[in-house]
Image 1 (cartoon, one colour):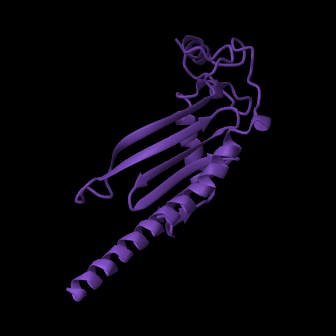
Image 2: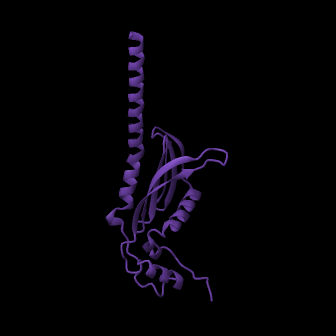
Image 3: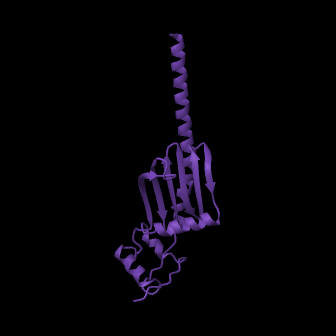
Length: 183
């Protein structure tokens, strides 16, 4: 009987230790993300957008922004949303279920996307004109972390694609538009 009690106690300590490591790992992964979100939504960094749309933007874009209400600097410059889905590493493998959150700001151009694919955490960001991808095992060790000019460019392309969720960002003065469509 004493043997089974020791096994039960050992198993309980092991479960508590793993749970504690999981919580600590999650907190260590979320810490940098909290700081990045604070930078993304910092009020002092907010920029103003082009007011006169008709002569500075292509006609199709100006019409789109008017249709979605982003022509008058309405509340379409910051977005936060949740996602649930599946990711495949390869066609032969089973899909990994994930839950994610994304924060997009046109005021301080950038996004932060982070996902939980337990026991793996992932984060993709474009902030301060820099992109970075980060994949971590339970918040305890990096599986992959990369930043480079290629990642910056890919993250910028994703940000521009995500601006449909924060359409005021299309009015950013740093974006130059060239209308190539003709009738």
